[in-house]
Length: 290
Image (tube, rainbow, N blue to C red; front, side, top):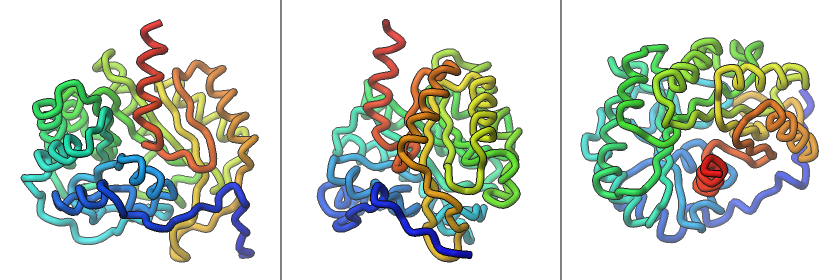
């Protein structure tokens, strides 16, 4: 297959990714970030601005999604100090809004949900007033695991659908689209005080109609926030990019999503789940208070 040339709007300076206070703080507490593990294109910018997305439950994922750079392999023992260390790191970094995600841990009976809850609790105790966003796995559809996270009272629960349903068997074969949609619905049904969020990638071979259908499915699940970004091939072993979507098209999708009733839409080539998450949450709170 012919290799697509990356357009100018996606050319990024990736130098000095782990420099500065953020890199030092992460290393000091022995933590992982999805910024580094997933090879996020915004890592340098976020680190330099003093933010990062903490990745819980180790850095070995039990799944092997074809788009993701996070390593798949034998999972690590849980680090019981991680929740308090994340809370301390967030405090040291003087974050106003902290984002937590994780590898998928299908090997754990609770999918790591209690570890999420413990981390949220530690942040609440050490940093009262700090808002918390969690990007969670699907917990294999276990309703009790989801409830454990809901009961910890984060401000936002995010679960990414990643792509259109017809591409699941290729892009994320160990996941089920309907299961992900059901998770998002359950959050809204069980708590009116937690915002729901989801995101997906473009450039994997989806059509315009399929993207609009996906947006309608998310809106039908009463999702508040949606993020849309460009898929970038992390290594030659991963799925190839089928198309680089022009920024104007991302803006068009944003307009369509807002017309559908989403409270907040971030859509652009370099948009990722936690990119400018603090600013987005501040805008969302302001909008909801009007």
